[in-house]
Amino acid sequence: MLPTIKWDNGKIIMVDQRKLPGEEVYVECTDHNQVAEAIETMVIRGAPAIGVAAAYGVALGIMGLDEKDNLEERFDQIYRRLERTRPTARNLFWALERMKRAFFRERDRDLKKLQKAMLQEALDIEMEDVETNRRIGKWGRTLVKDDQTILTHCNAGTLATAGYGTALGVIRAAFEEGKKIQVYADETRPFLQGARLTCWELEKDSIPVVLIADNMAGYLMKKGEVSLVITGADRIAQNGDTANKIGTYTVAVLAREHNLPFYVAAPMSTIDFTLRDGNQIPIEERDPDELKWIGDVCLSPSRIEVRNPAFDVTPAEYITAIITENGIARPPFQKSLQELRKNKA
Ligand code: MRU
Image 1 (tube, rainbow, N blue to C red):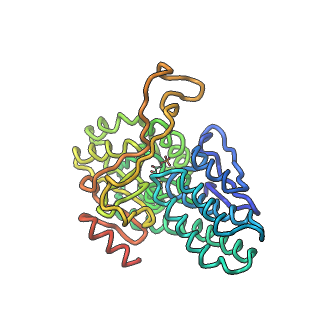
Image 2 (spheres, helix red, strand yellow):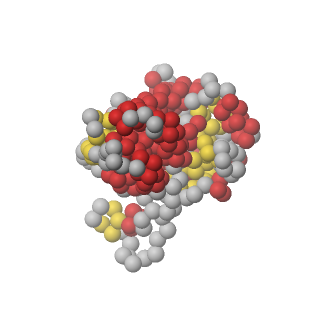
Image 3 (cartoon, rainbow, N blue to C red):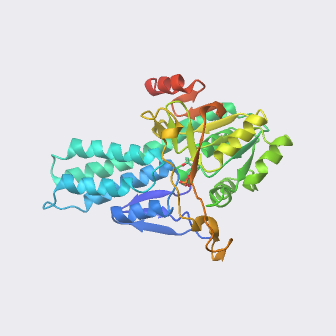
């Protein structure tokens, strides 16, 4: 399997996703500030992978403390630094909350034991994420038939998780089962996660993939060349409204217009049960230069005003089903998501 993030003897190593597919280089982090920076600058991205990185960030932060430190004060600083990195990704906060529970459970033990326990919690989060994605894949593959063509947006694969992927996990599971499928990968402007990362991953796994520009989906749907859409999610509200990479909403509206199923694949940890609907999901706005520049080339007049929201919210009524590790939720999501929360599969 491709490497996304790994603990390696006192440091974490991540593949630099800004450089793929041209260069396969790795970034090493030895403290929580470096991890926070790696998340902000998109060395690592994708909601579940961000969660895993943040958990390791907390572990590294605690491992850097000594007996003289005020543990609670330092924990709070580490936590606050990491939570400021990417506001939309629910898994970031989910993982930080889990690390916080571990900290308060273990803080009265001696420092060495606390440090060991914090690292173990991060390792568990990483390992469980891969397992979760495999379960998402098993549920999701039942929705994919032989000879179908699947459109996906952004990258919800191994690179966006600790391994296997969510949307791409479903695609992988269907492919591994022997189904003949083909994938259309939206290029996903402006950061090009589809063109650079999804295509790279699928090509490595020999899963047939065709790259398209974001504005081609409607044309292909109208011609009958798309059977279904599967995307990942950054945060899902309790009513099923789903924040995902900018452009997802457009694809969902197009799918509805062409009577195509639109599936979201995500772990339960992406669901924010504290939010009534998608209006409450914070949407990250990123640096305008991500839109204006490709490498060294400026695509527009340099002083032009730019909007760069990184995510949009697809209203629940456009979503056919949400595939989780606990099963498949169908509308009304208010009820079905709560049921999946209670009935762990
Ligand atoms: O800005 P990114 O690349 O972090 O956005 C990623 C996405 O929108 C993914 O689709 C989402 O996080 C799900 S990843 C399994």
